[in-house]
Image 1 (spheres, rainbow, N blue to C red):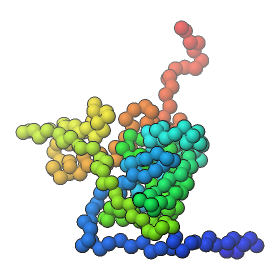
Image 2: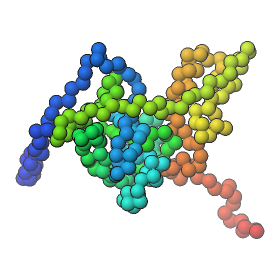
Image 3: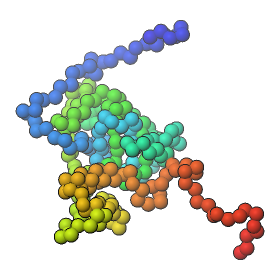
Image 4: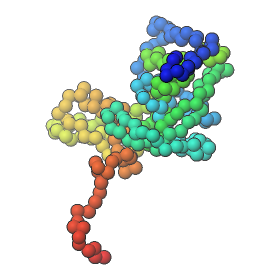
Length: 252
């Protein structure tokens, strides 16, 4: 490429990096709509519940997993450069960013790549979210309906099958009443905080209530369950202060 008199050489791929990635026909596999979750090695530590998704702009490492990694990894944490936004549009500042070696392997076929993660505090039951950046680094393709991910290695194309671990906890349905009253009936969507429930209107249809319960449980990470979850809130939006006359002398 030519740019302002500067010559940039194109990256030359090795032959094994150009291997075609093919997926079997559906008559040979059972289609699934479960999320693709895998178990792999992150800096010599086996980590499960890694959600592989194509809709995340950045690779996410959640705080509860980050704190279980070795101390040398935690010491590499750097300040964040920009906030991250959830699917609801809400922005929050991550705890930091870190570069970690991730190894995808199965039998003798393996591949190690250094990935840049944003460390985020959340109640989500996933440990890591691998997005398009990670997939590009591994030259991998993920198929949700096949429940598998494929990527090339120097020993041939490797296939990693999804663990198919149910991540979303069971939703407790409200009790049915003979005379339903609107706004009565609560649903526990986060069993770590059983006293903090979500109210579901009883006049709604059973199908609508079921969809609302499932939607709330799948997106449990967008709720602030405790004070420590309220990270990145600008002072212009929320700030605690005493509504007192500043000219009056304080008396102890």
